[in-house]
Image (cartoon, rainbow, N blue to C red):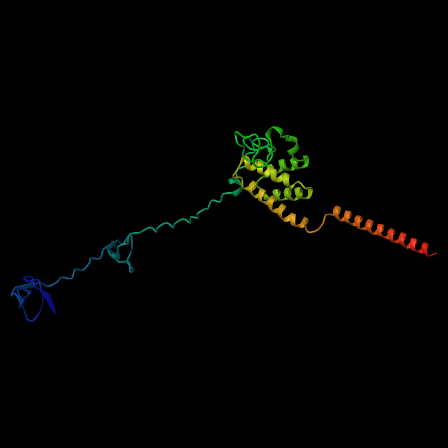
Length: 258
């Protein structure tokens, strides 16, 4: 067993001790200091008692003046209220509300100022003719570059559902059947002249180019029906003429032999 010396504050083993005035005396062998230690008192915690009179709590045998010692009641600690369940709500914004309706200002069938009225290319201030299509601006006739009545009606209806690509696709298919795909491409260029960043107009113009280029090889695979009919008639006429000549020659030969 070791103790801490009060003189040198070292941990020194206890080799010998003695009792002086009811205290334990230990001498440090290093510094010679004497350390006294009294008996340690073990405190007993008092228990709170409550006396209950006979009137309040009678004894088990009904004796007078009997008292019962009861432990002090513990302080009541109310339980913590349960935390309310909170559900986080996620706001979902509708995509349809974020789509801004396009602004169709001006005549959709006429080129805006500063553009060629025929090919819709940008115009030069000092030029009297278009550098791209060669049109002389003074000779331009607007009625020659107007869409048909049916296409104009369909285009006005398309402007009401401009963000619906299915409506664009239907218009392109119908115009391709009627042979008005070039005019639809012009209408898309007119739209891009007013709104260069219109995604639907850009896509429509590219779709027109794609359909025109895909239909051109199909048309060039064989001769047109009109040309085939002309070739057939020419060949049949030549065969008929040769046959008549042969018949006449044969007739002359037979006639000379008699």
